[in-house]
Length: 291
Ligand SMILES: O=C(O)CCC(=O)C(=O)O
Ligand SMILES: [Fe+2]
Image (cartoon, rainbow, N blue to C red; front, side, top):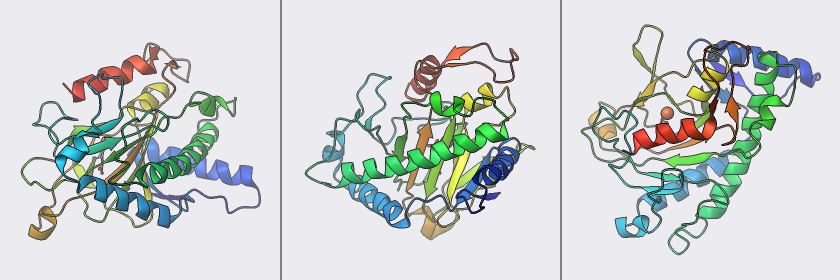
């Protein structure tokens, strides 16, 4: 489903409500949708893909200088091929990643890619705005009384940029998983390979839509909404055609989570899931992916 996110109606509230209903309809069925008119300049998205490619094309030693620390709770920096496995039952994912959160990421390739930090920070700010707008329409779609409840639980919104550039065929690029947080914003290039599990258990391609952000629900939001919204499983396969198979794929993924100390309790007042802390949940999932 394609949803237009920017306001076009005179009555902003009425318009937000309509968008909210559409988003909730998408997220309580397949758990994924595409958002257009999101307001992030295409030029900035192109610059993100540009610096990402320059970084991943650097020699390995240069990238390793920016490595993610061993501490599981510190999710910033470069992750080399073979270090993460989103489905731990498979061999490791065929991808490299650069994770970052502004003010936390310490290692930047300042000499090799001088404008990377600046572009990532600008992009982060844009993503944060659209993420808050989505949370606002969720508030209406979920009929929550406190209009600021979702915003206030994401005070230090923590979006990790996740970059892939894979060139070796053989394994899957990213094993079957559902995302861990509340919302994910995904920007993918034209190569394709992302597939989403439907209700019958079949994986169907989420074909890239130029200029659109692919948005999906993560585990925290599924538990928070007592399973109303779905954190759908997905994976990234290597395309079958000979040319695309040997072409690297880039994507940029922003994972939006509630604040570390925020306790997730079912919004409908049920006890479908016992209250749990965001920090504990995320660390447990990350530890499994990096074991
Ligand atoms: O690269 C993609 O298309 C999806 C990546 C993904 O699912 C993830 O990093 O959680
Ligand atoms: Fe994912």
